Length: 113
Image (cartoon, rainbow, N blue to C red; front, side, top):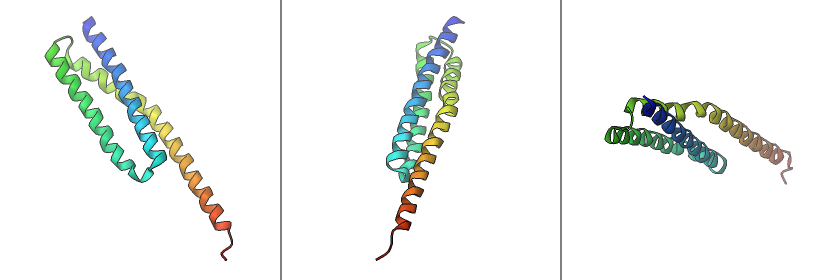
């Protein structure tokens, strides 16, 4: 039983790291090239599904802990932090939108000549 709990916490910590990596990737794309943000969502899904598949296969092949505990830990580790990270991405998006509006207002005030 203790191995199941330790395995769940280990995969939850790794899932937290995966969520952070996904946040950093999303933020960089959102700041530098927001029109390509839809592509990063595909990459994020590939990373997450790949991590879950790796957890399952490592869990079944090593026999260290029950794969269900490992998968639950991984899913919780990736999902719960995304509430916080999504809020941060929304703030970044809002800041970027405000900058675009300011630039449009500055251009609109110039006299055509």
